[in-house]
Amino acid sequence: MIFENATLISMNPRREIITHGALAVEGSRIAAVGKSREIVEKFPAKKRIDCNGNLLLPGLVDTHVHLAQALIRGCADDLGLLDWLFKRVWVLQGNYTTADGRASAALCALEMIKSGTTSFIECMLAERYGFDGVADVILQSGMRAALGKIVMDLPAYARSENKMHPGMVEDGETSVRNTLAAHERWDGAGDGRLQVWFGPRTPGGVTPSLYDQISRLAAERQMGITIHLSEVKEDLDYAVSQGFRSPVEFAQAHGLLGPRSVLAHCVWTDAADWEILARSGTHVTHNPASNAKTATGIAPVNGLLRAGVNVALGCDGGPSNNTYDMIRDMRLASYLANLKAGDPTAVPAETILEMATIHGARAMGLEAEIGSLEAGKKADFILIDMDKPHLTPAWDPVSTIVYAAHGSDVDTVVIDGKLIMQNRQVLTLDERAVVQDARRRYIEVAGRAGLQVGSRWPVV
Image 1 (cartoon, rainbow, N blue to C red):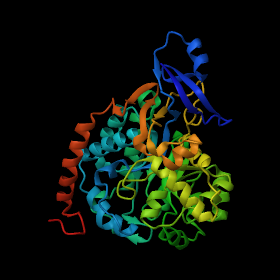
Image 2 (image 1 turned 45 degrees about the vertical axis):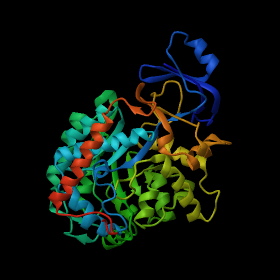
Image 3 (image 1 turned 60 degrees about the vertical axis):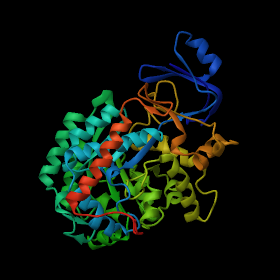
Image 4 (image 1 turned 90 degrees about the horizontal axis):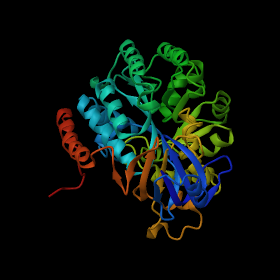
């Protein structure tokens, strides 16, 4: 296929924006990028898709996703993080069946595709969600993913002990064994679209000796590690109780840092931590909507970037963000970072788009494959319909996307050279069936959990 008559935000090393541009696809890869006339002349026999002057850019990479939480979107609004976990989220998730886990993953994938996300890192797939069913539905969706399997051996969070819902508790030996089994079965599936990673719980939910085992196994098998770190002050308190200055130094002592590690949040970090992260090549995923909603703080994005840390972007989960729309979160990421720095120029639109594309690709270990529109890379890209009042005028396509666009402006999605969505119609999942299934299941889950969640205002 040739996608012609587009404005291409290439994200190539020169960050070129190509007007009247085109992109040619052969198999799963980009064959050529350039001006429309040149590309059409070079590939005269290819099917041509007219982009009508709209905006073509790399698919977005969400580096912090909870697939299982799409089904419980909005279940814990306006609660502090610990009450959010102990009283709502874990109670509901602790009553999931494997069919619920698959249904939530399908709902989440559908939403991500429809808002332009083509690749993601799932951080914590519990046993009860059914790893095989989740992996299968992600393959069916056509998305590219690193699926982090939970590893834990303590029913705790930070220094809050024995408060985890019993349905969420797993033992260390079983969780490690099943993570390795999932890696053997699914890593590399879908022509390499799936990776399987370790997704250990936050310090306090995993013993130091198990962290040591995880880091050793990950190195032996070249597996990624993703972990929540320094999200709340309780994480800092826990690290100090273990004899460390910070959670970052705790993670360093147990081999959890490095180029194959992605740390979520890192709100409670300082310049000494940033230097450690940069030196070790560890990646950070910034989750602005989640941090703002739960009031856990504003991550020091400007400081991390200036220190040389690769910072990517994540939406987090349905209860802590309420959407999986990366375009919406790009805007918030810039606003909060500038507010934190006290400088409206600190983290501009260009940096935010890098975080959502090439930085995310780097965090997944896929910088050579995705994250930019370059010949030889995987054909993962999206088309944004610019013929909208809120996108007019568009003085600068980058700032227009970051500050004005919505996920619903995404018209077309291509992953691995395959049309996944066209004219906002998802071609790999039955949208109506997925949504109807989710509407039925969330009520059933709440019933099993014995929770009544709804409006705080009277409903008559």
